[in-house]
Image 1 (tube, rainbow, N blue to C red):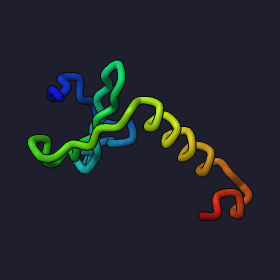
Image 2 (cartoon, helix red, strand yellow):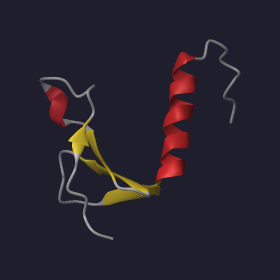
Image 3 (cartoon, one colour):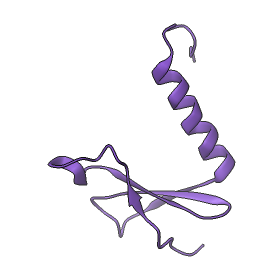
Image 4 (cartoon, rainbow, N blue to C red):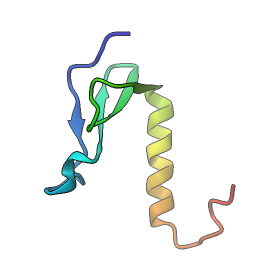
Amino acid sequence: MTTPSNWRKSSYSGPGDGNDCVEIANAPTRVSIRDSKAPAGATLSFPTGAFTAFVEALKAHSTATDSTRFRG
C-alpha cells in the first residue's frame, strides 16, 4: 500500500497543543490514520465502510442521552 499524500488534521486540533492530534487521509477504498507527532511512524488503515461506521457510532454515542444505549 502506498503512503497517502492528502493527510489532514482534525478541525478540533486548535492552537496550542494542536499538534497532539491524529491525522487522517482518504483514498477511494481505505482511510488511513497516523499520529501527527510522529508522521513517519506507523499508520492504521481501514476499509472506508468500516471507518465510516465507526465514526457514525461515535457521533451517535456522543449525542445519546440514554447511558444504557451503548452497553458493551
